[in-house]
Image (cartoon, rainbow, N blue to C red; front, side, top):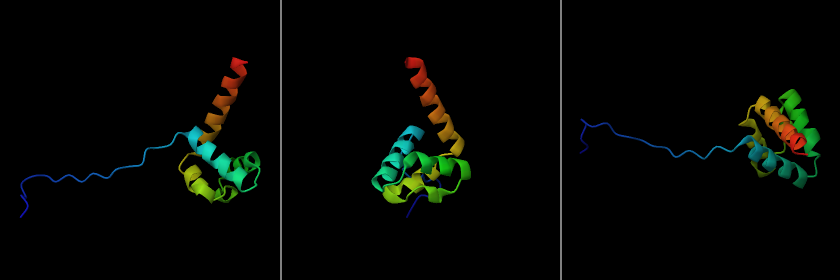
Amino acid sequence: MQNLNNTQFFKVEKEPEMQVKDVLAVVYEAMTEKGYNPVNQIVGYIMSGDPTYITSHNNARSLIMKVERDEIVEEVLQEYIREKITK
């Protein structure tokens, strides 16, 4: 019989969260593997919010939906600026 005077703990292990750049890398690779133009498809998703622009291959659609669209734009813009500054 359990001791009902003590609090029991239940712990669920969470998957480590992927960074936006990692999500974009997976999505880009999945789109390329399926023969899509990844840039056009990702832009379509960002502009419309319609996840069907992203293939479900390699779980890409589920991954990109875990990231806010404004975070995607922010990551791409930051990388573009970093690239311009270092040249």
